[in-house]
Length: 440
Image (cartoon, rainbow, N blue to C red; front, top):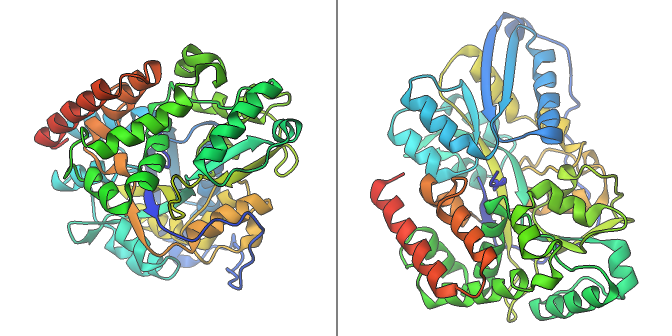
């Protein structure tokens, strides 16, 4: 999935991320399982399609369980469809049988569905969301002047996770600059551990890496322009960013499994490569949902650590934040109750205590998060006030959010041959032009 791309993903320019425990003066009311007469009168079944699987699906089920305790006559049936969600939903809408609700990370896709009249506004939840989220988060769920989504799960995506044992053995510390990161990568390789783990079989991980690089090199104005296709993918600024990206993915001997291995590695495996002991790689580029995606046991601060995506050429600190907009294709009392519940601190706490989660809901106590790293990452998200969407998530779905094609597929081609910068730029521009022309 594009996490969350996720991910609605969003771009937030903030101060440098300090990886320390963050406190909160705000305290949410504790979750209650008591039901009221209004909740016991609400009944029905809600079908829900999403990208979450494995541990994330289990975490969302805990959110559903909390809702069911309050609304015992409502059943929420969650189904994971993975990265193919945009295609699955588009097909279901065309056939007149969409689910009741869905988790959509791509604002461009949401706008398409709004334009088709496929989504239902959730204006009834505006006051509930406003009570717990900053105005910027309401804006993220607003399309064509109406509220259509609640940004339930968000994530700090400008992070680099590392194996603490590998760093210690190599004698390196968290790099603050791109130059230092490349130097540390050579040192790590010399110590016997490949520097990078790349989940190349999931194309969205590659777009996330490009976006972080492009933001720092080209700046916010060009980032926004490229996001809206107001400048072409053949622009010199894209050339520069791709050549910088090639310094990592083109370092074949420093990739876990080499180029062929990286192309075949999915995202959870790329995380396990770094979190396991002994590690198969020292670093993985991705968001704060990384620990929740690991299937090997590792302890925060002891086995693994994290540092902000490094500055490039003295660039100012910048954080890309990914998230998930929960939307409704129908309007029933049961759906309204669930949407409003998702805006509460209690709903977020059910997932937050499991880790791999952050939210713009500023009434979730910092103490809910399981460790100092989670608290720090979550704080950067909840305190964000200036937000714009992630680049690929703003693109038409066929270009920015479809398995094996558009950006995802072309960046996989780039992973296989990082020297073909010009050819990849031409492919990206042709694909973007076609997608914008079709409007989907």
